[in-house]
Every structure is written in structure tokens, then in C-alpha cells.
Image (cartoon, rainbow, N blue to C red; front, side, top):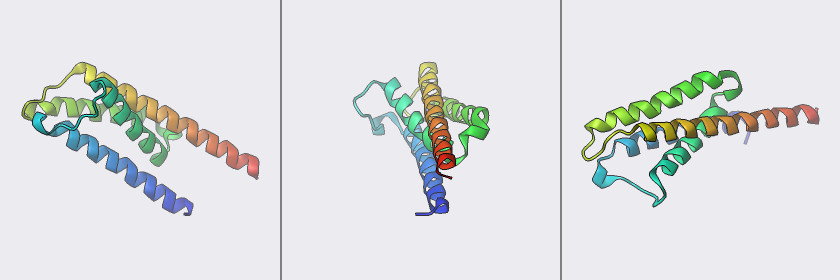
Length: 124
């Protein structure tokens, strides 16, 4: 697969993760999908994975603060909108776990991008 194909695949993965977070965050309580892990760990893992793909797709090394802010805004918006979902309630600690996960994912993406760039330069 060429670079354009990889970029497209990663961008689609990022948006698929975002859509999944939105759907699962707004599902009524009786339809919630749980892994059996601690809820905060679920939030952290979901946003870390999403943050990783978003960071790779949208060049985290150039837009660290913007991407982190947008991911935190998504987390906050999802928590607030849970007021309108039957049986759900927002939680500040859930927002915190989600935001921390997003930062972890973006940081890992930043390291991955940096290492790929360094490897590419050393090959030349």
C-alpha cells in the first residue's frame, strides 16, 4: 500500500473511532456495551486508541495542542449529552479519564511519527 492509501486508511480509522465513541457514549444505559473492566479504564483505552489514530492522521507533531483540545472537547461534549440519554449520567471523572486517554494516544502517535521520520532520514 502506498503512502496515500495508508493515510486514507488511518484517517478512516480515526473517524470510525470517533463515531464509535459518540454512539457508545450516547446509547441508553440498558444498551451500554461494557468490557467488564473498570469504567475509567474503558474511557482511557477508548480515547487513547482514538487519539493515536487521530494523531497519526492529522500530524500530531504539528498540531499537538489543537488535537488535544478537540479530543478533550469531544469527551466533555459526550459527558454533557449523556444528560439526554435514558439511564445515563455525566461524570467529571469520566471526562478526566477520557481526556487523559486522548493525551496518551496523541503522545504515542507523536513518538511513532517522530521515529518514522527519523528512520526515513537515516535510510537516505
